[in-house]
Length: 245
Image (cartoon, rainbow, N blue to C red; front, side, top):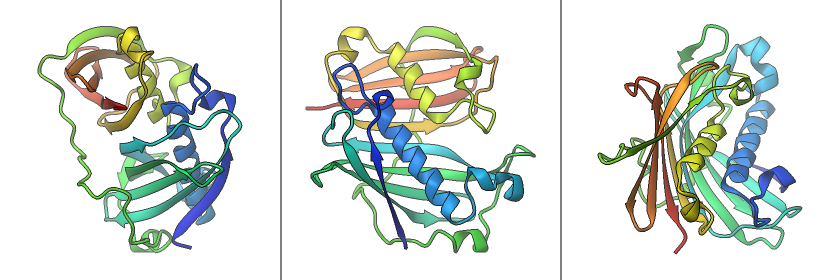
């Protein structure tokens, strides 16, 4: 099937302090189903010892319409939107147990040799495993290149710990959202939910690296967090968050 579907239950780890599905929980669930889908066609995590391949995400674009509570069973659909020799684009739809649309998302990935730690081209035989569903969740263009606001202010440094690292031996993409939330003023963070999230990943961070985190409120509804290395020269990620109206 071109569209892969699976049900997930919202766990305690997926909710915020208001017992609502969190942004982190949404990213976790979409990362999970993307991995499961790839595994069904022979390019999942358990296949890496044979294929030597893994997927690395470069971009997220997420729009949230509602926030179900703990223990709600979600139906998540995912599919290949487009594949080039260098990049794979994957879309998502999430529905609650009453078939209400919870969120939509699109994402950009690349193929990675997990042993050589080098990028790989997506060959025609791999592309055939992920047929294009000819469906896009967003009408507008997918902005893949976010920019740091000129007036971003330094907030804090953080040394990457063992708990931040995933099977690709670098910081898991979800953790960058945690770093971003630590930079947002608490009076803002606790007073709103975000309806639109965009994340661009640029350079991987590994255990022992020190990251520098910057924050800027670009307007009343938009917040941008930039994550760089300790010397503030290399960019690790940019996270753009917009609040619900």
